[in-house]
Length: 465
Ligand SMILES: Cc1cc2nc3c(=O)[nH]c(=O)nc-3n(C[C@H](O)[C@H](O)[C@H](O)COP(=O)(O)OP(=O)(O)OC[C@H]3O[C@@H](n4cnc5c(N)ncnc54)[C@H](O)[C@@H]3O)c2cc1C
Image: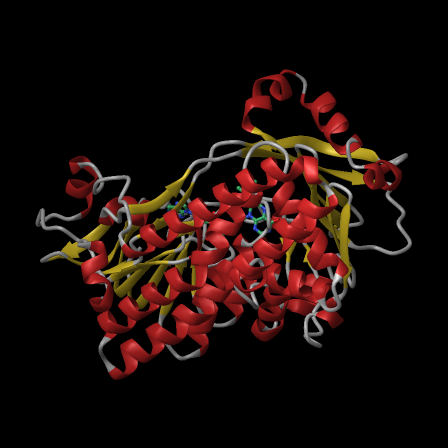
């Protein structure tokens, strides 16, 4: 197997196939390679917020997603202990797209088909085992079946990205997991008003909604300390977890579980250096955040759209390196606030009282539901809604209503503000948690032995110093 391409994309799921499709439609010669056979799963639940659904529509693949039987979910229901926020896409500024939940076994196959129909060459069951490099510049990939040369290699190959490893892309702002996720599919759920549900009651995070093929997906996110007990009896663990959510007990009443219980506990949050000479990273390969607010697939789709136009312009009109650097900076800016918000709402243990009081205040004010949904939909930054001003107002109101809780509320507010100050410091000076990939990886990928590191985008050079 041989070939010369403008772009080789490694990984063909939420990030890789849309990117390959868009580049192929722009007239570039593209190959997308994945070691997986499709249809197949990845460890992930599948709630797509309206912004992600809108991208599927722009890609022209939404009708096929809906034809799988996954209902367009016109209502979203978000619960944090006794607080509930409800809304439909209409509250997202007339955005119009509903929530959607298509199993990855189905969704990813449709995306792979879309890439092929768009003119990309698709190679599945083909593992990338190294990179071709010349004078420190990536020029293609080596697969188990042969080499593919390209002007640019994009790693869309997920959290354990081989492209990241081979290029030595470093991680920064690493966060450690507070929760593990466990989910399963059920049949026999008859809910007259289907909706997307996400929330946390006590220490039990949950996600539940109908998916394709007449199935219903329901899962929990539990504190990491509960993992050993959960793994001892996952059936009991999932049943008891879901039982914590009153509303779900009713919905799942006489439903039957279909297939195994999935558990995902090995993850961490990170940003990775996202571009260098002849390479770039997109989707989970370059960034992963706590799964609690269900952002990853929409992020991957949004990044793919944006990266496609940067590559198209860079390969067409030149200055590819500058455009990739600009893309990297955009990726970090785009992901920054939601990264910490996700980390906060996914932290182990029950929600801090102050956080709940802020959500309560928001839920009670006119337009509050819309603001909350717009945060989850990545339309507005969390800090514009959960501002310091709101925090102070909440502290005064909650302190008046519950004077005996005041010391606790003050202490929680202090923690929230200290954490925010820490994040501001990190933004100025990222902490790299891992050194470049070990020498054996480099040797396997770059015959010249030269570094294939990216140069940090110009205006961030001092930060990355
Ligand atoms: C527990 C959990 C729950 C989640 N729930 C949600 C949710 O509800 N909603 C949401 O939006 N997001 C969710 N996410 C996040 C979401 O799963 C990811 O953000 C998304 O899958 C990213 O897609 P991707 O294309 O970047 O990577 P992936 O989906 O990981 O795809 C990477 C592909 O690269 C291929 N690959 C890897 N190495 C090689 C190689 N050497 N050669 C060839 N191919 C290779 C793999 O086979 C794979 O197909 C969740 C994540 C987790 C862990």
